[in-house]
Length: 105
Image (cartoon, rainbow, N blue to C red):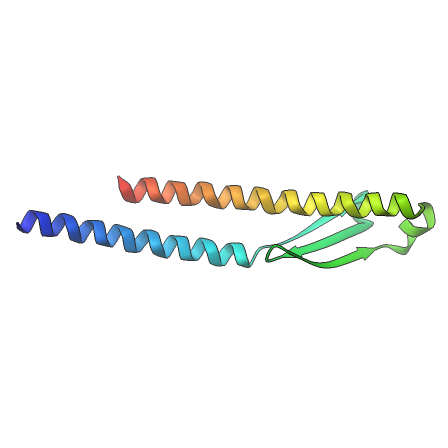
């Protein structure tokens, strides 16, 4: 019976460690901020906590393009920022998977 209790205690400790790592991952994801850009930073979009926070358009960009082109540049910056968030999330999920495998082993 002592062996069963030790196994249970070890499993409980691993579960608690995993819960802690998941909480840290969630916290780090909520603190993620990226800046998507287009035309070499002429148009930037800041994304934080999976929300759009700010858009900046260099006035020189507005001098060289029309409204449709400007809209395309904003979309390009949004897509760049969204892709950066996707990559960060994938990297963090890989770390979580490593932790699960290590704790399960």
